Length: 373
Image (cartoon, rainbow, N blue to C red; front, side):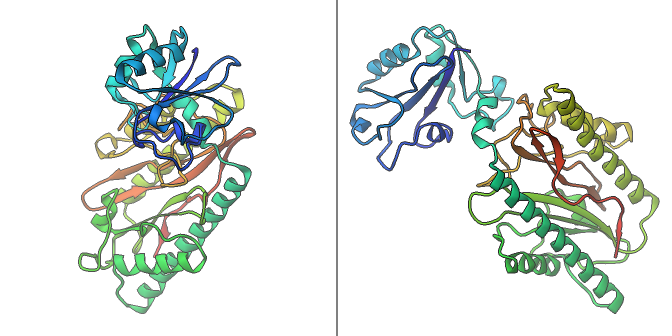
């Protein structure tokens, strides 16, 4: 490609601000950033009334006033480029990448320019620093301690013959996390029985199941260290009393699928062969489909771990909800969380993986057996 053209209108696209800091001045009109593939300078095109407040820096600042001037200056900015990257996803396959409106894409194409996706370029802006990776590991350790506390509480209540609700357990986990200095955010997902069969179930004080013998227990918890640090996110399964064959079979299939995803990533990184997010999802889901759980799949295999939000800006493991054609690049963390769901229970196992220059690391605790409570 000849370069990267970034476009923003009133915060519609977060990436231009990560390439060129616009400062605190007003930005109420359309603006563009052109990053050429060669050694040419980065150029910024802003409206004339906002040129004065736009910071100077390691870029050339250009301006336009009217609509016709915008088209002329933008064509000149591209300087005869024939293939440029923008925040665009063909057919809207990936809404995480699609940040530029269709009309602006049409305008750029009218100059005889082919527009391709900038998805992999955007990932480079989200790569973790060594300090952020260390904080992610610290958050992962707190999550492991939290699920251990939750399991101990369930076992204690069961042995004492005392009832416990989903909401009560959830709030105990929130307190445990806050006491260790981590941001509370959204409370964990705690599902007993049918609640475990709803991937985004959330108990409330007035609608919360009491744990009963024979219930599956699903704990999904995520947290981050304060500041600009990435999340950690795990899901752990337990069962009130000995599980039956139906639950055990589903649990074993989910673990096989999860581990197949890790193995695929490790093989690809070890061989230097690129892997795209949709390939991981397809590979993991194939294990569950072969085991007969195709009708019980409700979501993708995993999501990028973010810093400002739990779902980050890197490649997700998804060929189901979206078509993730971005490459899994070093420097980012992702969840692997296959699950199968039924009306009366569900099973999900979630771990985090970090793709580094040296290979693929599992950064969270890994469940191997059903926790009996």
